Amino acid sequence: MGTISAAGLYSAPAAVSGTQTVNITAASSEDPSVRAAASVTLKAGIVVRVSPDKASLGPSESRQFVAWLAGAVNGSVRWSIQPSLGAISAQGLYTAPATLAACRL
Image (tube, rainbow, N blue to C red; front, side, top):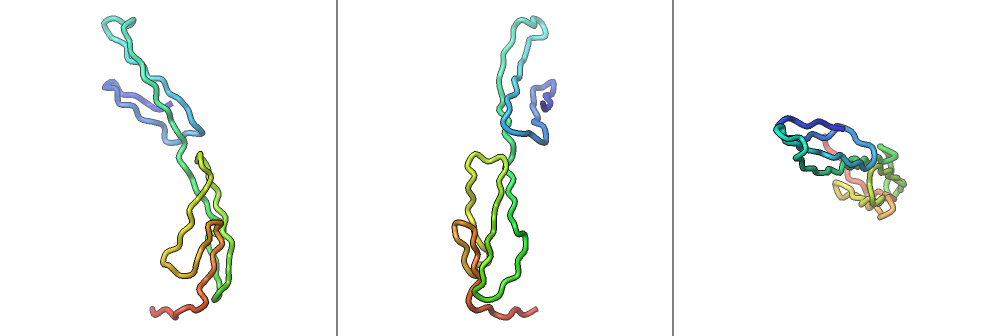
């Protein structure tokens, strides 16, 4: 899993499922019985998906957003909005502002 160069540079694989351990051993070319070892823990990256990925709302209307996480130990997310128009709850419920300013293009 992964590769190691003759100089000892370890490169992890591009994708890992779950948490896995790789054991790395260096042995003397002169006497292969003389060796040392290390272990590397590989962890899958965290992936976040949000649904819906688009929404159209009028003034004061709300829409519930849901997040799915993969590869995370803690399954919680922190919601935020940019720019700060309306509000979003800790549970992902977004409410549009009561008044919306017209945009100039």
